[in-house]
Length: 491
Image (cartoon, rainbow, N blue to C red; front, side, top):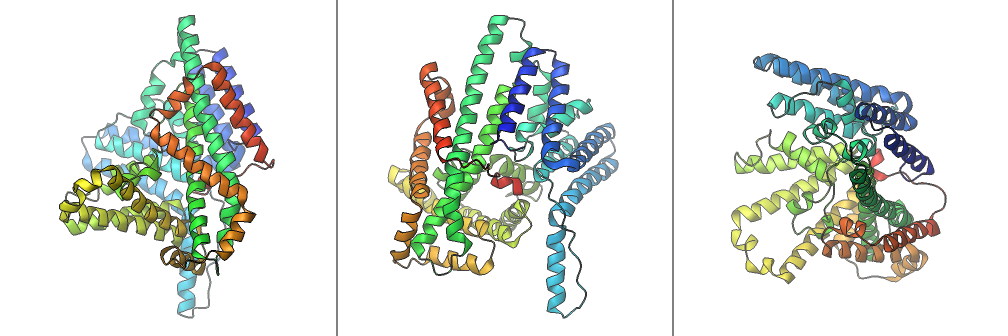
């Protein structure tokens, strides 16, 4: 079920009405779990069984790990079983055909006649997200940082909570489970006055965040997409300016698309009485590669840090091993996005960026601590350089064909100072180019404004309603009646 459809709007309003009508906490949890399973089944059918499998596997693994916490060997065996089950599930459905393709190419190289047939498995929606959620839960229990859930219903709702189920943010049990154990104030308050007060704020803030998410996705991302597709469907022969414009367009598209989904998820959760972590914090104003990954897809980058980078040794071992760890983590982070070498290249580039940044910090402190880079112009220059490389890495992320990718990357780096065809492309894509410019302005205003969403939610009711109406009209003016998938549904 796509967020950007009438089906979801009806579904979500129905949930709110039921929860407001029946204030029993146990019923609310059971109803939210049933609604979450329906939400997933609506889009994925029988593949919901994989979600249920991961849920039961890690619920009981967590219990068994806790029960034998004085037996390190048994604990480790149970943890390995849990990891094998989750990663095996993820690997089989997401990477089996990719692995078969590599074996077949290897066989062709050595003139082997037999080819392994492809399995052509359907990629379960959200599998990359919910397996990471359950893995983090089991590891936290293993480390002794989290007491296991005693209720399968409670744990199931943590795994299947529908606002973020399909494309994150990736939840941590330590953050979400305590919320389930507390009273949901807006639905359970004994004071009618308090109930209305809390409801109105949560409703207004949640709707504000959701509205901006819909604006990002349906007004910006979906209407910039045709221009990006035109540039990268066959970029051979295009000028550098066209490639750079297309790259900027895709950078805006993927940010508006993915952060739009996260906004809708976060806003919906707030309305339902839950807090889920922010996933983006103005990433295109990052002033270093490290800063970028503290702002982009935060739930994934912190997951990779806590459950992969630190266990590998992080930066607490030799310098060369630190750089290797960064490369490994980002390579796997790239592969997490999809079974394709272009994602591996994207991850490798970011691993190299992070390693170079650490080398500069470690061995050239006179450069990294220079007063110039703390001045306004220095910060501006740092942002510009960082984003140049961030957007360069978007090319392999977007362009699957290897020849097209190499050509686009060459044109991005070696500017040819030709603008004839670019002028024609701009004229035929006036709306997309205009929306790119508007989004840059919109992004800058949100960067300059602290507590952007809260400030919108605090607007006078008349002006707030006018803003929502303007967002709706803006979307409808360019909407063609066919809702577009979110980009991260593929991952």
